[in-house]
Structures are given as structure tokens and as C-alpha cells.
View 1 (cartoon, rainbow, N blue to C red):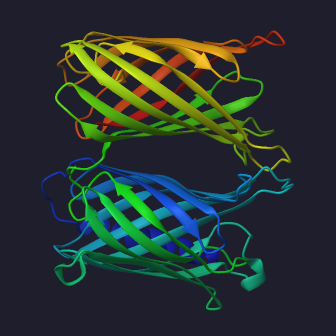
View 2 (view 1 turned 120 degrees about the vertical axis):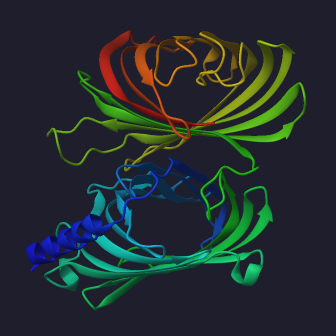
Length: 449
């Protein structure tokens, strides 16, 4: 039954794909959002999300997104549910789209023992009816694996979506998704939000994502980088989006690391600005198999407050304060926090942006209140004003207990979303015990400014 359903889903998509009419190739789109609030169990709630869309042929788009729902208590203990979604969407008429996606979810618990990781994968085919700010989605699919066998032997599911943005031309919007598993169990996510302008809104959600959970209510504020109706960048608080998955080739301990950055620009003047950087780092351990389940070591939040002033056209001086919060996954270890304060000097507002400078630099140094001091230098060299640019970057970061150096070569292309495939080498040195490790790495960086 599962194989038959899978074949039906794939045929359904490709038949509609072949019938899609030829049209102008769409542009890349990006959406970043950050939710901050509390839930009905009096826990702190965070949810960063990054979604990217890339045109392929005719009216077909490749998309993927990465997000996680995190709720923690005062001791920073709680759940972290990672969601990775990817798939294809094709436009078959002025009002209908067909979408096929694979969705992966894994649940981790911070600062508590969890001997077995809970993760699921589902395959969904969905037909969308879209008209202006209204969208209705209907589809079905199956769970890949045996996680849901207690609720039926086939792991089948039906899915429905109803989204209505700016209801009756008001500030209110409604978004929803409901899943019916084996005609037996319901899962859902309902959200009602109110637009406050500049990509800022308030929201209330009611969520039941998993069979064994009780419904939970979340409320808070949401920052978004673009208007959801068009996907175009709007005047908002988010000024930089970055996602950088990096895979290690010969590391004995780690499979790779995922880096994600979102920068908020709150107070901009002619020669100065105030930035808030909310960054995420998730190092992943190497497993026993090349393909399989790989446990993340922790989730780290380097949150940076930065004041920057332009002294000359290509000279910027700034002050920064960084609070690093590190939460271990699935082991009984306490969360750690550390704070550093320092100054920085650079020749352009964002080090990684390729603009008029073929040579880029960023220097910083300061006091690390846990490890004595910290200092670093980032250097970049690249071609400019071409559709495809070549470049290299070197980074050094050190404090009294740890140092890390890396060099990478990259190719840069893309307009709305800048893509940078890269290869490089990195060395980590733990100064307290003399442990060193050098390894090669590769990956791709996604950047939106």
C-alpha cells in the first residue's frame, strides 16, 4: 500500500509538471522570520525560520526551509524541534499550484538525558488554490518509517491548509495546517496574527505537532524580512540573512556544523546604526554510518549588540557586546553562558557582502569575562562587478583557552539570494589541554542583504 501511494504521489506531480505552460522564469525569493514569546506552560518560546526558493524550468520552483521550535524554562531546559523541509512546486494555471515535499523533524531535549532521538519523515503531495491573499491547500502522503505504526499499518496522512492574509483588508491574518493520520489522529497548527508594520507582528498559535503531545498555545512577537504576499523585500528590521551548512571531511569527532545569522537594524542614521545579531550554531557529531542519524552536540546562540559609526567612506568603527548561550542536547549537562565586550574596525558594513571592495577586512578585540580576552581577524579577497565572482577568506578567532583558524575558497553568484559554494581547511586548538584538530570542509553559503 505504501509503495502504491508513493508511486501515485510522484505520478500526480510529474503529470501536472508536464502540463505546465511556458512562462517567464521567476526570481529567487527568501523569507526570514524570528518569533519570540511565551507558551501556555510559562516557558520562553523561540522560533527562527529561513525559507529559500529557486526557479528551475518553466514555472517550477525548488524550495527548502529550516526552522526550529524551542521552549525552555528558567534553567534553559526544554524541547527543541528541528524542521527541515524541501521540495518542488509547479504552477499549472493562474490559480493552481502543485507541490511535492519531504519534511524531516527531529526532537531534542536540552540539559536532560534522552537515550533515543525522536525523528520522523513524511512525503506530501499537495494542490494549492491561490487567489490574491487567500490560499487553500489539499493533499496527502505518508510517513517514511515506523514511528506511527501504533495508529495504523500504512502510515498514511491527509493534509489541509487554509491561509487568509489581511482578512477583509485588515491587519489580521490567519494561517493553518491540519493533518489526519490513518483516519484516526489529528495534528494541527493554527496561527492568528496582527501586522504592526515594518515586518513586525503579534501572534497567537495553537499547536499539536505530535501524537503524544498535548496542545500548546504560544503568543509573542514576530519579525519578518519580506511581505508574504509577494516575497519582495520590504522596509523592515531585518537587514542580513545567512545560512551556512558546513560538512567536515576528515574530522574524527564532527560530521559538520550549521551556522545561521539574522541581523536586525533598529536605529539607522546617516553615519551610525545600531544592530542586533541573533546567530545560531549547531555542531553535529559524526555517526557510525555515512548515512543515518547524527546527534547534534548542542545549540549555541551568540547574540550580539553592536553600535557602528562611519568615520570615512571605507572605514567603520564599532562597539560590540556578545552574549553566548550554549545548551547541550540530550545529555544531563547544564547550559552555559558567557559575555564579551570589545571594539571592532572594518572597511564595509557587512564583511561578507561583495560590493566595491576587492579586499575586505574586519578586526575585533575585547574582554571575554569567562576566558580572559578575545580577538579575531577576518580577511577577504575577491573579484567584483561580475555575474560570477571568485574569492577567498581567512578567519582567526582566539581567547585564552581556545583558538580557531580557517581558510576557504568560494564562488559567488546570484542576485536576490547570493549563493557561495566553498571548500576550505580549519584547525581547532584547545589551549588548556593542547588538543588540536585540523580538517578539510565544504558546503554552500546562502546570503541575503
